[in-house]
Figure: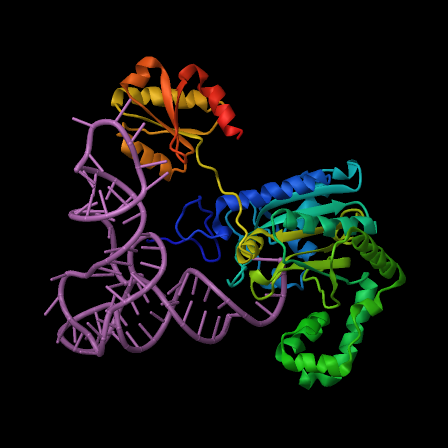
Length: 432
RNA sequence: GUGGGUUUAGCUCAGUUGGUUAGAGCGCCGCUCUGUGGAAGCGGAGGCCGGGGGUUCAAGUCCCCUAAUCCACCCCA
């Protein structure tokens, strides 16, 4: 093969392909999207979609200039002759909020629940559960600060994943407070760690200036020793009165609904616009970080993009990571079903008739036909490989008498059906 | 950006201390089998041994570079 697919991308393959795993099975992707649609739309979310590329400025302002996403993971799009400065979107929220503001969706009754799905792009090195083009399901609620909205969002994220048959997920829940709370906490951490600089790992020395909260979930043993020695207080101790009450309310609702979660003080959002409630969904099967998805409240984002104050909250999970988790649990998703009926003609002059019957039968069911005349033995072999439930071979006798011999490929039983009755019979067979 | 493993047919893999026409199983196509499938037998197609350079009389095999892939770090979905 002369040309391979670009690094960090996957082809989505039809059922039956060699090397097929759930994360590249096109029908599994479709099933995730359909399940998300069902669960989210029943909860009142409406589907919308935004472009795959946006102004670079949107992502810089929306995601934050100090994040790794902006510093080293953006794909710049160079190829629009009349206008430059576009990038492939690295996440969904900035575009959703941009579209909300630009299209006047503030006119719709608030809070407005939206959802979308599609590819995201990050220029990262590849490993398990991490790609350069990956896909997310995304849920956003705009126009409310109510803690009930937070709790419902978290519960819905769990609902979608559960509806797919995944069981081993954990919600890690935290609150990063309001901006002043976070500033206070970062100041506390800097004051605490700076005198012990020489005991921190090199990575954490860097974190101390860029994002001190990251030190707390460092994988380095020396960092963890130091954290224990210094008896570092958790972020939750620094929440202001309002953020604290809000967080208590979120937990009360989750408790009332029986949504399980673990309080995790080390929850840190990588994106600058988060406020208050922040959470992640974890599963063992998805790779080193084990995060299936994450979410949080972003009340400051709209204003940061130059719009009015519009509170918001949202989450996203990675479809590939979800499929890895399902695969790890051995959950199988429904694939594309085979045809209900496979038709073949024995003689070249009846191929056209087979095609005509198939085309009219497609009004009620999935029906395929052979493009060349086939001997009965080969016709049934073919029908079997295509996973048809029924097969019929048309010879001169059937053509003259205007009938089909429908053969059940599992039981081997045959029954004769008049062509005029075919669609009625197929409808019955489809329904049982 | 960094570190380690891997790369031979569509798939899973053999291939000896370098030795001349690179193999198997599965899959695919055909035949045995001109009105009834899942089996068996026989035959066929399909490889610049990831790419480039080097050593050698001779390289799938040894050396260097490069790419892809897998896993991990940073970070994230």
